Each structure stands twice: as structure tokens, then as C-alpha cells.
Length: 311
Image 1 (spheres, rainbow, N blue to C red):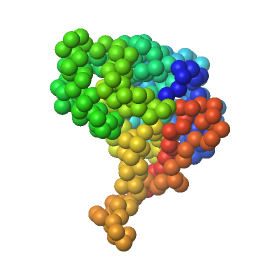
Image 2: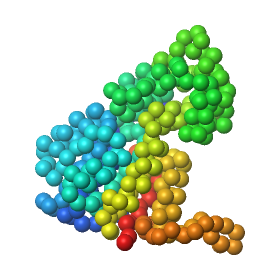
Image 3: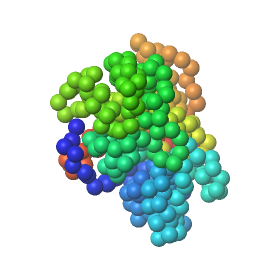
Image 4: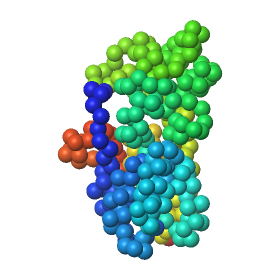
């Protein structure tokens, strides 16, 4: 847990992304998590006049930033929506994708804005929607969900071992009054779990789980990974920055399964049939350098994986 200090938005692992992701200056690229445009602006500085970049985001504030960039640079366009829209983008561009970037999770501006409800460090409405104008807020979901469903979400998406106790406390509390703010939920979880480990708020895993659930983040990630097999150009690259084990595991297994290698058991024997190779992993997973973590603590848990589409 940090001390509440706000960090300026910094694109995570920018140099590593550009080094491994960028292949041609006249290519068609997609920044599937545009945010405030840090990665996109850096890429545009490398593109020739023939290059094209589409940014995707469902956060209205990010879309507004993208519209400003679109007005400044004719090579860029912003697409409002989830990033599992690759076939639509390819159809509009009339060409396959030479590079897709996914910088997963919640951005620094979202975390730092108390009105969005993503962080337990600042009291605000218990919302957590990437698009506040669409879908159900966390507060509304917690007000109606079954105790078992709440426990399942906390365990599955947050790997919270005491999910049942927390779910039971949430249901008991809402009989008195609904949970409407981030502070109310964080305090309730702390009352169930205690202070927890130094440097990590006991509500961390539960807030992560509820955010992933309400935004259907893993569902969108799985759909997008599958879409890359039909939308990436031969030689095109997929780059994914993950911030927790659930996301990274999905990406790692997807790249492994599409690299033509079946999982191995004891003695190195394959556990299943090998599939045709569609992706080639480019090196091992990479992490942010120590210097970057010192300047941007939120890069501490970032993991970058890159793969290239093969014939």
C-alpha cells in the first residue's frame, strides 16, 4: 500500500515495448488500451507518413484524450469500446495488424480519481466501471448478488482465500445499509481480515476481483487473444503487459498453446497433441527495470510477453 501519493501517468515498460513490438514504420498498429496515450504517442514518433495507429479504450476520459490526438495526427484514430474488436478494426483499415499492444488493468489516472471508485486509498463511490455510462457498478452488484456468487468472484478473480467470510460479512452488512463507497467496503474487509501483511492493504485482492468481474476483463482478454490468430499479419506482433497472475497465466498459456508445443509431463513427454504453430514467443517474460520501478512504483508487478505471428 502506498501513502496516497499520486503518480503522474507514465507508460509502463515503454522502451521494452517499442524494442520488441515495433517492426515496420509503415505498419498498421493497434493500442488496445489507449489510456492517456503514452505508448501511442511514442509509437507515432516512429511511424512514417504511411503508418497507421488505432487506439482503443472504453473509458470516456481516455476517448476524449484520443480524440484530441486524432485531431493532431491524421495517422491516428480512436475507437471507443472494448479491445476485443480486432476483426472490426481490420475490416475498417483494409489490412491486417502489424502490432497489437495490451497494457492490462487499471491506469494511474483511473486509480487516482476518487470518483471512479477503483482505489481503497481514496473514498469515493463504489463504482469501478471502465465505462461509467455502461453496465452495473460494483455497489449495485453487491447489493443484489447471492453470497455464494460474491465468494466465487473474490476467490476466482482475487485468489482471496477467505472469500466466504468476506461475502458473508457483505451480505450481513447490506441488511442494515447498502455498501456505497470504497471506504465502507475497504473498512468492512479489514474488519474481517485484520490489518494483513505490512505494505499490502487487506482489501487489495477483493478490489481487484470485483473490478475484473464487473468489467468482464478476463473474458475480453480471452476473446482478444483468440482474435489475434486471424487479424495479425504474418510477422505481426502481440505484446501484452500484465499486472497480476491471472492475466499473465492466460497470456502465457495462450502463447504456449499456439507455439506448437503441447504441455509436458514427467520425463518431458507431451500431455496432449501438439497443435500447428501460429505464434512464436520472442524471448522470455520481461519485467520492468529497477530504475523504472523507482520512478513508477506501479510498474513493480508488470510482466511483458511478446509473440510473433508465423505462417
